[in-house]
Image (cartoon, rainbow, N blue to C red; front, side, top):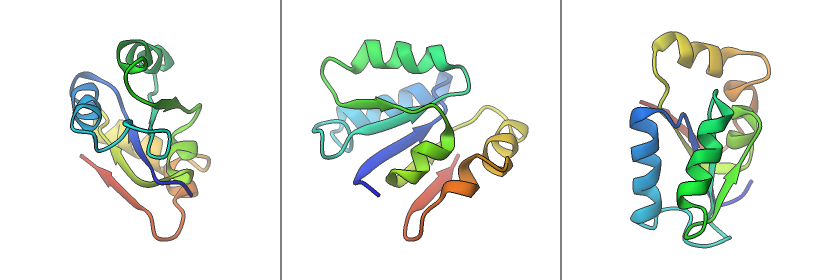
Length: 107
């Protein structure tokens, strides 16, 4: 596990919250503590990387599970309870990848 900070869900609220982690230097200020992101619509990750990636260290992952597997702390901000259930409960997603001594919080 790394010391990266994960963020799952870069929609209307998620993008703003993830951006705050960058601008407040909680994550992304060095390669040692990148902001690791995933979104169900992959193009949103690309747009986020394009917007902030020249100034901050951002790592995009292909699955939400990959985010939690490599981060000590992961924030999730998905649009609906159904979206959260799908991302968290699928056999190959978040709950399947949470390592010991890591924190995942869902807003």
